[in-house]
Structures are given as structure tokens and as C-alpha cells.
Length: 172
Image (tube, rainbow, N blue to C red):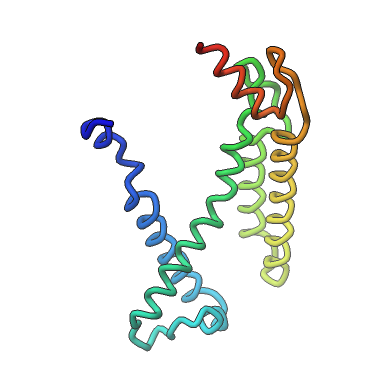
């Protein structure tokens, strides 16, 4: 690999891939601690807003930020891993609930409605149920992409592997 090849792929730099999301996660966790329940800050062993932050607290906050970003990226990872289900012969089929794009837009709309119109006493449980429903839909997509066996060009296997095989066979 030449130096000029590597310099154009800035997104593979570790600072971009790991440090920047961790800093963004630190901001998100700090915001949640400041605006959420007062018990959250104590639960995470972070100092109160009146205290100075020390090295141990900063390290914990960095790790919480990293964890926050990794958990927040799972829906996109599942969406990326199961995108073979969204197209058939390079054509986007009719809209259906199991479609990743439709599911994401629908769940985002429902989350907006829950955040703005559900009474605050029920909002936490509504958010948990919405997250659970989204998780179930994503697990179903993972199952459809990796469990059922199909045959593509004489190769029998999971949808995702057969799709990869057909791509490889088409280019050679």
C-alpha cells in the first residue's frame, strides 16, 4: 500500500473512528447526567457539577462515552448487515414494514410522537416498549439475512452469503 493511497482514506484513521465518537459520547453522557435524574451521576461514579473533574472521572466519562456510541451504533450496524434484504435484483421492492428504510423512518416518527405527546408519567415505559419493538424488528431482519437458506447460482447458503457469492461470481 502506498502512502498516497492511505492518505485519501481519512475515515480509517483511529482518531476518526474511535476518539471522535467517544468525545461525542462524553458530551451525550454529560448532557444526560445534567438533565436527567440526579441519581444517574451518582450511579456512574461521576462528580457533581460543583466539583472539579479529576483524571479518574474523566477516564470514566471517556469510557462511558465510548460505550454510549457503541450501543448507539448497533441499529446502523444491523441495518448495514441486513441491507441485502432490501433489494431484489438491484430493484427496491414494494414498501413493507420489514424494509430497513421504512422501519427506520416509522420508528423515528413514533419516537418523536412519544417524546412530544405521551404524558411524562408514561414516557419512560413508552420509550422502553418502542426500543423493544425496534429490537425485535431488527432481530427478525438478522434472522432473515443469516438463517434461511437459499440457492443463488448453484450456491446454497444464507441470504447474505449467497448475495456475496453472486457478487463475486459476477465480477470474475
